[in-house]
Image 1: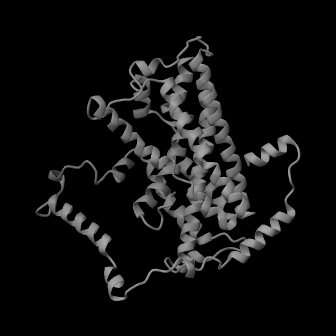
Image 2: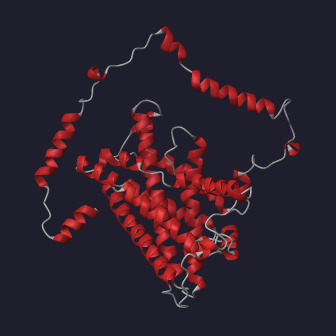
Image 3: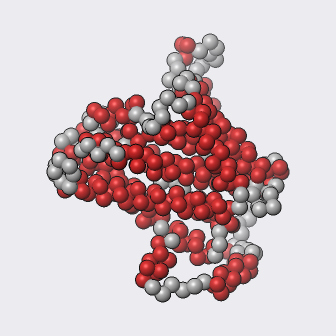
Length: 376
């Protein structure tokens, strides 16, 4: 499910239909590979509906526990990586930085030498840049958050810490545990399900800790559910906001007595039903029908292709840049001075909300209370 709802139909289909449903189905397949993915997709959609159909408080409660499991998981994996690195494993094998020497810390991609290593880094950087998206989710939850002037800045200050702990240290640990050319790793990436393609799991299996991958798969399953739940929340609120602004059908602006945009929720889940395509072994054909197909296999081909397509793309880009220039010139739109900008409309409501929560705040006294106040 995705934030790209208003701007990219392809992104909407990709996120709602495939990302969470397909990931959760893959995680369940780790335990029950013979069960059709449609069963897991149905369970996923039902859970997401239940968590989003009631008051936002229940969505927030679920996300709190989901997030807690994710934090415990990454901390546990980092701690495990450190122990394995220094030899605290069943084989007493001190890994150290062995794999940074052979085969090396960076894989070559497309080319050899420094250029190949840069291409390898950049090809992964694109995925990593997409994966760290999500801080805007905090802003989407602001209208329904309690004590918003305190909780939202507090949540945003945690983002750099989360990125360092989850991604930087996680990438470091992966590079230490398993070499990039490990045959089992390459085979798992190609054919594995669930957490089988995880370098952490491969390291566990290498040292005979066969029960731990099941625990990891369980926690990753809650994380995937959390991802789908969050994407659903953002998509629903996004569609509801568009309807309120008059940019989407007005039916999506309606809410229940609890303030839940029910029709927007049903629409988001309807698009999420595209995840059922993963129940067929041939579903990949649906998503790649226009990719990797030779033009010689297409029944009808327009003349001047593929050059006409490039000309059309260039024209569309120029239209994007120049669209609306007549308004600026003919209407002589003027810049608004900073001194005349309206920055206070609605501020009184925010001031009243802050005062309300300040009167009811209990100041922590004990050290553990202060720690929990800082953490959450």
